Length: 176
Image 1 (cartoon, rainbow, N blue to C red):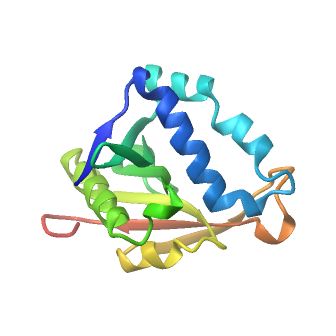
Image 2 (cartoon, rainbow, N blue to C red; image 1 turned 90 degrees about the vertical axis):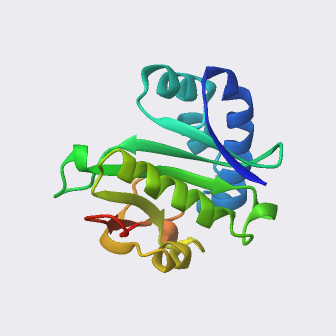
C-alpha cells in the first residue's frame, strides 16, 4: 500500500538517503563528476535541516508498505508572470528506479494537486531537464511547457543544460 507522509527533522537521515540514491539513479549522467558537486550543494544534511526547520520547503516521503521508495519537495512559489501566492512548486520528485512505472508517481501527483487545491493555489509547476524520461509523464498528467532555459552549473555536461518549465493550471472543482 502506498502512503505519503510529511517529513520532520527526525526524518532527515532517511530523506537524505532516498534523495541521494534516487537523484543519482535519475540524473548522474548530466555531470562530468557524476553529480558529486551538485549533491554537496543541494543534498546535504544542512540544506534539509534548514528547509524543514524554517519551513522554506515541505518534504514528503513516499512509502510502499513500510519501505521509503521516493520523496518530493514542495514550495509556495510560482513562475513569472504568476504571483508566488498562486502557485505550488514541485521542486523535487524522485523515486528509486526499481519503483518507477508502477503508478506510484500518479498517486504522488494526485496528492500534490489535491494539496494545492486545498491551499487555494491556482497552479502547480515544476522544472524538468529536457533529457528527462519524465517529460511524457508530466505531459500525460496535463502539464504544459511554458519556458525553456539553460542551466549554468559548472560541472554539467554542455549538451544536457536545457531546463523546461511545466505548469498545470486549474480554476475550479474537477480541474485537478
